[in-house]
Length: 143
Image 1 (cartoon, rainbow, N blue to C red):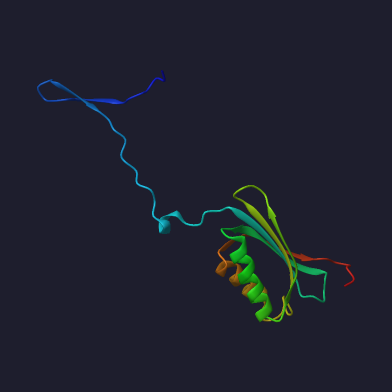
Image 2: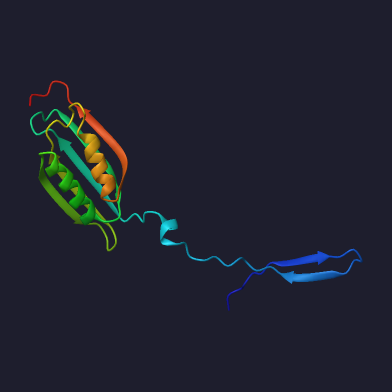
């Protein structure tokens, strides 16, 4: 039989009498959907270039709730900006987690104004959280 532990609180009055109370933990209710925030189950990697200069690349790494929703929003943003999804790979890492790898090409990715800001907005609209942004500028690379 398992041993249960209980907390016993003893309160002493002015006359010296003792009153023992059994301390009960407060009842915790489940958080509302709005209070839960984002339940992380999937990770993503988006590698972007401008399609011409392969020496300059941008990588976005992060977390998302739905790989399908994120893929849809990012693809929509890329096509609206005149780009293309070069490759897309979806991997199931466990029963509850997925991994999305996308390679995209967007014209004027590093232009003025930079298109990568619109790409970030697409990731956020798709329910993603960007954990890390990596910009690679390879010196001595021939495109």
